Length: 145
Image (cartoon, rainbow, N blue to C red; front, side, top):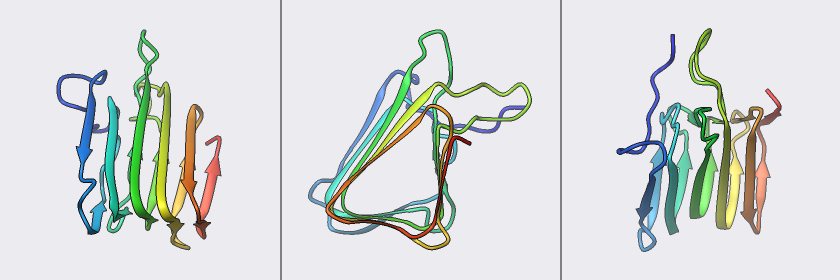
């Protein structure tokens, strides 16, 4: 009974790079649930990235014989978290596959902010790196779920 999940074309060991370093304005990433890898690198240094405007996002990995780590990196001018953000959540229930490890890095030259209704959940095996001059987490942060 595994839930739907998304991964990089060609396999979970590949990397998806999004190079928008000269883009300006605000971009939304909402509803990307159960991204299981490979690595994801989004570079939009001059823009604002809004995570979860209408729905949350979750980034995880599948535990397999290689014990891979999924690495997700967002680099933007500002990063706003408006909804839920799950890191290394289990995909599916019952006999669903367990997660290995996931590293999520949010890097913003100006600021990282979470809305008062936002929730960040770090499940076992999750790492969250926040790199910015200003970090304001007004919502809940759950660790070790």
